[in-house]
Image 1 (cartoon, rainbow, N blue to C red):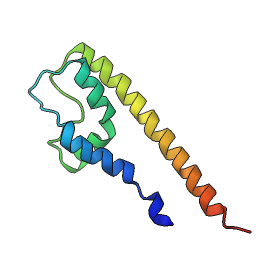
Image 2 (image 1 turned 180 degrees about the horizontal axis):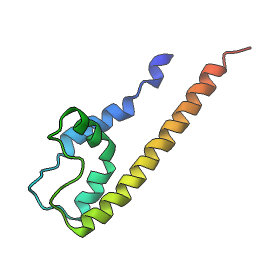
Image 3 (image 1 turned 90 degrees about the vertical axis):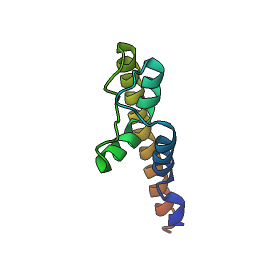
Length: 100
């Protein structure tokens, strides 16, 4: 039953970031893009670690972008931590349930 606990959510998020949230360094971004880029901060950060040309935050943006990016980034990181915590708790409960 180990296959049930593979990290499929991060893999889906990275694929979605590759397909939908590519940040162009020369384009001017507003607050709507800040929300999208903030939601995909962690997948884009992972991509940035492997390829330095991938941006996880736009360089040419408005003040609204910065505010929205920070709000979405903090919310996204908290969401990832909560999800990871509950997933770990489910796995520990599942693994510990076979003891008699």
